[in-house]
Every structure is written in structure tokens, then in C-alpha cells.
Amino acid sequence: MAPRTARLEAEPLCAPKTGELLVRTSWSAISRGTERLIYAGLTDPTHRERMRSPMQVGDFPFPVKYGYCSVGRVVAGDDALTGRDVFALHPHQDHFIVPASMAMLVPEGVPARRATLAANMETALNALWDSGAGAGDRIAVVGAGLIGLLITYLAARLPGADVTALDPNPTRGPLVESFGARFMACPGRIAEADVVFHTSATSEGLEAALACCGTEASLVEVSWYGDEAVTVGLGGPFHCKRLRLISSQVGALPPARRPRWTHRRRLAKALDLLRDDRLDALITGEVAFADLPAALGGILDGGAADVATVVRYPS
Image 1 (spheres, rainbow, N blue to C red):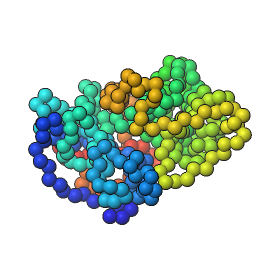
Image 2: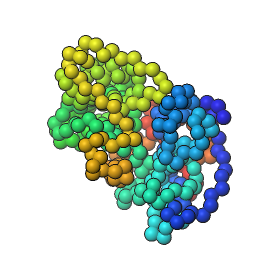
Image 3: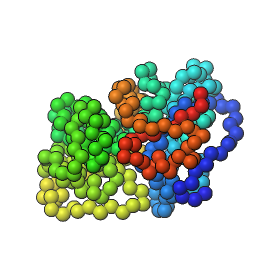
Image 4: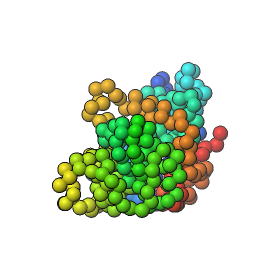
């Protein structure tokens, strides 16, 4: 296979073994930032092991079966779970077998379609932990894509927090404001933020994020750039303001939480945080599984109003 090429392939599934579940997929979500890099082809071998998804098949660059946001109904493997919806870090596939230990029950009150956002909510939650943001803080989020919007949603729930999301796309405004935050479409200075999150994966966005920082503020870099070079000025205000630049990556728990939290506990909390009906507005597109290969390029390139796209499977 070559860059920007996708196809559906059939593969046999055996009956689940002890400790495994057979799941019929209802929905999966396309992680636009990560899957765009996979679709384009990873050119730097140093990234390839880090970019593997838990149930990936094949090796980078191609051919590879990729994805990590699947929700489906258990049809065999555990009588107690049969008929229940589970979330799994599994590639796009209409039926799959997964170890029961890698499947997480979808909580009551969280529709299966919305539950596909669990992996993204995990990333947002981890970023908030990494930032150290607290009640009453002035918080800026630069980049109102899916991750930026979820960070905005969580940050706005902090008591007394003053949260602003910055993005040049004005269609993000109503979403940001529905979460109780302020929206700015034009790049500009947000007065002396205590904590700034950057999620746009652009050098321009990172520059804007630096400009939002108050003295000794924390800037949390959540973007993943893959093979792309990043240019940013670290003179002037960066040094005189003694800014702190923090890398946040969902593959590792923040050190302060590792003694008590596991990845499974964090995923369970991310699913629980999806109980809010307002989060349905983040899913702006659907595509049938059979149509996914032809549609994938357009989905990953994205339109102005696109936030998250989910894949719909036959019932």
C-alpha cells in the first residue's frame, strides 16, 4: 500500500478463548490528528514504535490496521457481559476479539456513539492533570479541535476558573460557549493566563500560546507533530517571564498520580465524564463502515465545521 490509500479486508475470527470477548462493533471514532499522520505515512522510524495502537496489526508505514476508539456489544465470551456495550482500543473493524481485560464497560447514561470519545477524553484529562490547573485560575486553550474542546470542557468545570479558547475558526465559538467558556477567533493576547494549553499542532499556534502566558505560567504542549518540524521563538518573554513548558502525552500517567492511578482507572473516569449530553455536539459527522475507504481522505483533511467523525456499523 501507499500513502493516502485505504481498503477493507476480510479476516477470519475464531471463537473467543477463555478471557476473551467477541464484540460486534456499533461505532468507532476517527482520531483525525493521529490517523492523518498514519494515512500520510510516517517517514521517521523513531516515531513508529511510539505510534503503535494497542491492537494494531501490521507495521509502519504500510500495510497497517489502525485505530483505537471502538464501541460495540459483547456477543460471546462472558455470559455476564453478553449484550453489554464496551469500549476498546481497537482498530476500525465490524467484529473483533479482545481480551476482557482490555474492554471497558460503557457506563449507564453514556450512549455508545458518544462513548467513542473516551480515548480523546483521556487525553484531555491527562493534560489537565499535567497542567496543575486549579480553582480560580485564568486558563487559555489555543486550538479548539476535539482535544482542545474537551480540555476547555473540563477546565470550565473548575470552580471559579476563567477559561478562554482561541481558534481562528469561528464555527468553534458556539461549542466553546456551550461549555461555559469564552471564545476568541482572532489571534491575540489573552491577559496573563496562569495556565495555557496548546493543541493546534502548528508553530503559529504555539507562538500564540506563549503570548498568552503570564509570568511563571505553565504552558502545556498537547499537540503531536509527528515528523513535522516546529519553529518557535524562545527568546524575550519566554525567559524573562520564567515560563514552564510541559509536554503532555496520554501514554504515561503524570508522576504524582502513578502511585494510585492505572491506565484502566483513568479510562473508566474518562467514560464517566462523557455523561453530559452537550458533548454530542462534538460529533459532527458520520460515515458508514463500507464507505470508509473512499471517504477517509476527505475526513482527515477536514472541513471548517468538522470536529469528530464516527464510523457507523450495520446493526
